[in-house]
Length: 242
Image (cartoon, rainbow, N blue to C red; front, side):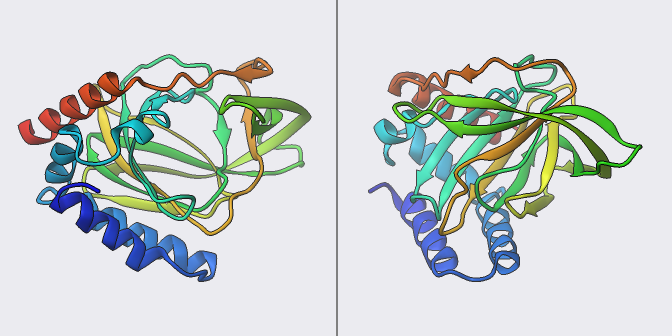
C-alpha cells in the first residue's frame, strides 16, 4: 500500500528490523534506519506521498495525536510493534501536562533530528542523598482505550547523568529502560523522525515528575483523517521550504 517512497520505506524497515537481535544491536540498527529515512533527499518525498493519502491515513490517524510531552505525534508507517515510524513536531514553549516528565519507553527507540534542535537529559534512579526528589508513577494504557493511566508509585530520587543537544542531521538511540527528558531547544519548531522497535513491548513505563502531581488518567485524542492529512501537508511544506 502506497507510492514508491512508502513501499521503499516499508521494505527498509522490514529488512533491517526483523528478527530478535540483542537490544544493543537493535538500537544501532534502528538508528541507522532513521538516519537513512530522515535524509534531506528522502524524507520530503515520503511525507509528500503520505500527505496525498498513499499510505494508510485511516489507520495512522487513529494513532496520531498531541502528546502529553508537548509535541505533535504523527504515525507515518505502522509496521506493528517492531516497526512504528513517526514524525514528531516539537513546538517551542508548548505547554503540556507532562512537559517536565522524565520517563522511559515500552521498547527500544531511535530518533533523527530533521529540523531544529532537541535538548536531552539522561537520568538514573539514585536513592542517595544527592540528586533531585521526584514523584514516581507507573504508566500503562487503559484496557478499553488508548488513554494513559498513571498509578502513583511513591517518591524517588534521580541523578542527572548526561546533558546533550542534538542539531539537525544528528541522531540518537536509547534502550527501552533509559530514563530521559527531551524538549525543543530553538525558537522554531523542531522536527524529528522517530522509530519505535523491538519484538516485545513492556506493559508499563516509569514516569518521574518534580512539577507536582499528575491526574490518574490522561486522554489521547486521535486526529481525524482530514486533520492528519493537513498536518502531513504542513510538514511537507515545512521540509521543502527549508
